[in-house]
Amino acid sequence: MIKESATSRFQLSLHNPNDFTLTFELVPSRGGRGKEHARTLCFARNAAEDGRLQAVSITENAGGHPALSPEVLGIEIIKMGLDAIIHFSCKDKNRNQMESQLFAWDRQNLRNLLVITGDYPKKGYRGFPKPVFDLGSIHALDLLQRMNQGILGDSKKSAASMLIQPTSFCRGVAVSPFKHLEAELMMQYFKLHRKVVGGADFVITQVGFDVRKFHELLLYMQLNQLNIPVLGNVFVPNLTVTELMYRGDIPGCVIPEALYRDIRQEAKSQDKGKKARLVRAAKLLSVLKGMGYDGAHIGGPGLSFEDLDFLLNQAEQIAECWRDFIPELSYWPENAFYYFAKDEDSGLNLSMPTGRAAGDRTSVAYSLALRAHSLLFSDRGLLCDAMKKTCLTLHDGRMGRVLANTEHIIKFLLFECQNCGDCTLADLAFLCPQSGCAKYLFNGACGGSRDGWCEVYPGKKRCLYVRIYERLKSHGNEETMKKGFIPPRDWSLNNTSSWVNFYLGRDHAGKKS
Image (cartoon, rainbow, N blue to C red; front, side):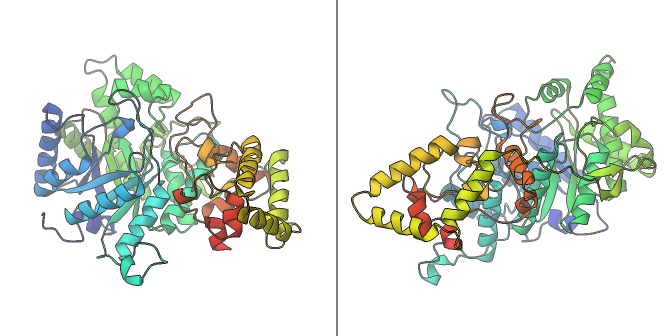
């Protein structure tokens, strides 16, 4: 077992106001051996000797493709004297496997994590795998917080059964200010509130190329007192990845039209634009440091340590001139939504939010569902007592199965109900995440949507949380998505009556009431 202090060099740097923390993203390839892994370890060895990086992050099945498990490289890299941040994704494991894996990582001193929902899985052995997503990133943070407190298990059992040796995981999360639509952007920010409440220790931005959007996130976090360190993502795409991002083939990552044209033009040079892309990244790095970020998370396909060295040296040389680069690093469409108004003097943002237009109260289905729920399931609902008595009477008799089937038919026709037995409709504007979200998320959107479309069904299915935002906003309730916690699905209730489970206090809503 590796011996290491519970507080790593990365963590110390992250919370030192005098440090600008630098990390680099490594992407394991498929297979357990090969030249790619050798190059990755060579990069890490050079970085450890150089000393300017505080850590490398190691992805887990990036892009949904199977690859070497990140902890394998993480263990080897820590032995070199460099900290590792292990990506902890929710897409391939159920909650029991997650807990088991976390125990193993804690024992191996792999305690710096980036907690993410994960990309939808892509083709692997003999076809496409079944996506798991038993937990979302908010659930995973809650699990980690309980593990750090040394408390797990079923609260109905003895207190001793709930206690474990406390862990000491440092929990990073991701957020994307790079969204075109108001609904997409606000759901990213609202989910960030939940992540901070859930125990997030630091945040890394999604890939982006617009300094005003980077600045917007800083201002939003300051305005809302989301006081955790934030690292800006400095990504250096090659031509292949540029094309993929431009087409929308990499979830959540956007190459705007103007940047796409610039990169294509630069590619006509002898080095196919590589130096120009590295210089642009150095300028972005200097701007992030100048505007007040706590650090930067650097990455890009095929980058050598020599490329990183050039980028860091270039950024250091131009650091004092960072304001000069703002105009040339403004790559966001003018018609896209910004949370703050533009500061024409600096090219960044003013500190006051822009006004958001009132929601359109045209969702008749949502209005009717709200009224029906208030009548039948609210403590003060006029029909609540009668509904409860009817459901429990039928449940206790021979008609119990008929009641469950009738409920399912009604809710399937109205809401595409999947009969989970622990209904979240009232929490999510009467839209069902079991049928409406490819990742079954309960506590906010993933970062993969683009222009309002689901990452899994672009152009065919709108992101569930864009629809939820629009419904909530139509009644002035969108800010409710900042708070609250919907626990993960209790699979013991599958194919049972959610009405009965609510009235008996078995489901998450009944337990809270």
